[in-house]
Length: 148
Image (cartoon, rainbow, N blue to C red; front, side, top):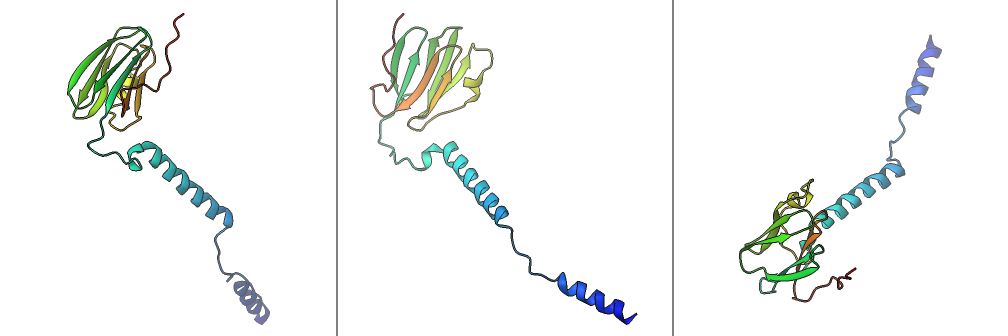
C-alpha cells in the first residue's frame, strides 16, 4: 500500500506545471481586436477628418438616367425630387445632412442607408441610377457621362 501512495504523489507533482497561454490564442485575440478596430474606423469615417463648421459642403446629385448633375448647398434645408430609371427619388437636405427619403426601387436599400453628413459619404439608388454625395466644392469628382 505504501507504494501506491508514492505513485499518486508522483503523478500529482507532475500535473502541477505552469499554465501558459498558447501563442496561437494570443495571435487570434490580437487579430480579432485589430479587425474590430478596423471595422469601427470604417463605419465612423468622420473620426479622422478635420473639417470645421465653416467648411462649405455641397450635395452632388448624379442622375445616370437623365445624364444630369446638380449641386445644392447643404446649408439650406430642402426637398429635391429626382426622376430615375424606375420613378421618383425624394432627397431631403436638413440641418447639414442628407438622405434618400423615398424611392420607387424595389429593395429600398438607399432609403435604409439613412443620413449622410461627412465629406465623401455616398448613397446610391442603383435601380434608379441616382447617386448623392457630399463634397466641399461645386466641382464633381465623377467623370463626364458618355452618351450612347
